[in-house]
Image (cartoon, rainbow, N blue to C red; front, side, top):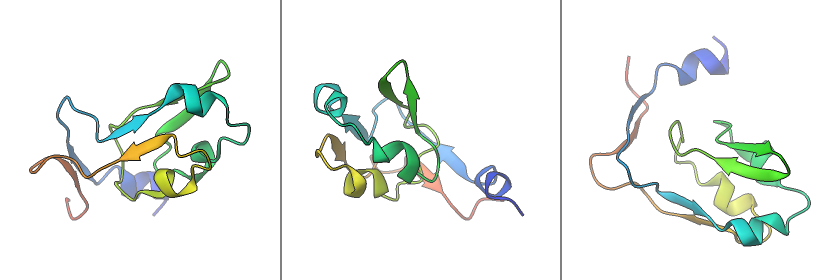
Length: 89
């Protein structure tokens, strides 16, 4: 089974509050932008020289926070009852 097929089996219950906040000013100073390549769910995308982030589909692995060399990513677990359920399906 491909990774995309496995990700499609996950259940996401998201509320309106993002559990990851990206400081766009600090992020703009980063030349490497490793978050784009390090996120297994591809939540970070480069658009017009700026990193765009969508928390829907996030696997809550925390790799973006660890890999960011500038510390531009603030990460926390989603509020109780929200987030990803890996054992769905």
